Each structure stands twice: as structure tokens, then as C-alpha cells.
Image (cartoon, rainbow, N blue to C red):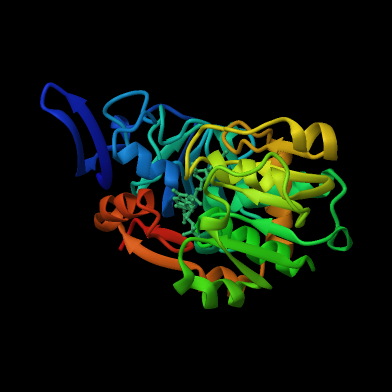
Length: 327
Ligand SMILES: NC(=O)c1ccc[n+]([C@@H]2O[C@H](COP(=O)([O-])OP(=O)(O)OC[C@H]3O[C@@H](n4cnc5c(N)ncnc54)[C@H](OP(=O)(O)O)[C@@H]3O)[C@@H](O)[C@H]2O)c1
């Protein structure tokens, strides 16, 4: 049975993003075929559709994540009817991804949908939200508790940021939300932010060490912002780094590390081991307020993906965008 998909092609005529009709046999090989319910638009999908070095093979169905129902499987762990979620593993980069009504992937990459979440909610969480949870787990593993002090979230109105604010607030932390969109202050307070910080305070070159303002931070912005976040972290605090929305450089000094014992924890969602993924999803099912998740979610159809992808790179998308591939 044929199905709809977005496909990126690069050939003599250049780089193109098209909506096409495909047969299952045209997808990359895998031992599980999934009827996709929802995919999502992440920052990396924006980069993939804009030909910014993410796509490794052409033609390719982009989309780095999806949630859906197993249609057929020769993998020992999955059977038809199982609800599953996929994030990363090179899907949407070098293996056909989620912007399609069908996906064929390795069962080793699939996470069973945790109890208590629908496929729509799992997609609303998406790679951005799962990465926010990996960041929170890293802070907890470093010993951070609500009693340690305030926690800062940068890029707060974006996907990783919105889920991080909601999670940390629900866990009892006092959350400082840094945003370049003052109009989203009300939205961020609804998600649980106690204080809003203008991102301009953090985005310019600063001093090697500043006033100790937060005990921990979740950063998805990089560059000067991350350097200033480190410089404002309290003695013994931990900062997680997962993103590069401002830039991939790190133009700072070692002072926060050697004078304040600050830890910089790297977060990778793409190759994270399966046991950490399952831990993250279990915690998301338990600790993420579903009303907050709904508040940060916008649903679009496949045809709207290219325009959302452009807007996410411009920093204009709020929260999470779910793609209803069957709309
Ligand atoms: N390591 C991993 O495995 C992993 C996984 C997921 C995401 N990521 C990365 O994390 C980042 C965020 O992803 P996302 O899906 O949450 O994207 P997003 O929804 O676009 O959020 C990024 C946010 O960063 C802020 N921002 C944008 N441009 C900025 C600039 N020039 N200076 C300062 N802040 C800026 C904006 O927040 P405000 O408007 O609130 O300021 C924006 O909403 C991306 O770089 C993505 O590639 C990495």
C-alpha cells in the first residue's frame, strides 16, 4: 500500500524538499514496520530540510523521531499492535525517518510506549523533550536537588527549554527561564518558571566568573550563553549542554571549573544507550505534567513541515510542534 512522505533529494538540480507517494519497498531496510501516528519538528529537522549538514544519504525521508503502532515485525521484542517511540539512531539523517505515514527501522532502536502516554503525547515530548529529561537525569546524577538552589533553563521558550522548565518545576525546583521572547513570559510562568531572564543578559561576551546565581542549568544554546551560564553557576554546581541554537563555539575560560568545581555535563540523545532511554521515558511518564505538555504543543500536517522547519531555525517556534502525518 502506498503512503505519503516528505523526501529530500540532492542531485544535479540541487537540494529539494518534496511531498511524495512511496511504497514500503522504497524505504531503507529494517525488521520492524511502523504505522506512524505522529512525528515532530525538532531544531535538527530544521537543519536537515535546510541542507545544513544533517542528511547523510539521498534521497531520504527526514524526521528524527516518531511514535506509532507496529504493523509487522521479525524482531523478537516487537509484535503487530505494539505502540512504540523512536528518537535518533541516525533516523532522519542516514535512515528514512518520521515524516511519513510509514517507517521501516531496526527494532533495536524502538522504545515501547511507556504506560500512561499516548502516541500523541510521546510525539509532543519528542526528541527535544526526551533530551530535556536526559538533561534533568544528568543534573540529578550529579547530586542536584531542589534544596541545592535555583536552576536556570536557557532557550526556555523552545522545545528542549519548555519541557525542561515544566519538568524541573514539577520536581520542585525554583526555575529561572532565559528567553529572548519577552512576550512568552506568561507562557513560561504557566509552565512553572518562577523568574524570567532576558537572554541578552547571557548572550554577549562576559567575565570569566560572575555572581553565583544558580546551582544548576540546562543549556540548549551554546556559545557565549553557555560560557556565561558556567560563569554564573554556584560552587560545585552542574550545567548540562545539549545544543547550539546560538552557536557551536565555547568561547570561555576554565575558571568556573578550577575555581568553583563546576561540572559541564554533555548530553547526547542520538546514541544514548537503551537503558537510559527507557529510564528517561519512565520518568517523563511519571514527572511531566500532561496539561503543561498540551499547553506547549501545536499540531500541524505533513504539508506544513517545511514552513515550521524554517521558523524553528529562526527561533520563532514556541514549545513543541507535533506532525499528524495522517491529517
Ligand atoms: N544533543 C542532543 O542530542 C540534542 C537533542 C535535541 C536538541 N538538541 C539541540 O538543542 C537545541 C534546541 O533544540 P530545540 O528543538 O529545543 O530547538 P528550538 O525549539 O528552536 O529551541 C531553541 C531555542 O533557543 C533560543 N535561541 C534561538 N536562537 C538563539 C540565539 N541566537 N541566541 C540565544 N538563544 C537562541 C530560542 O529560545 P528563546 O526564544 O526562549 O530565547 C529558541 O526557541 C538545538 O541546537 C538542537 O540541535 C540537541
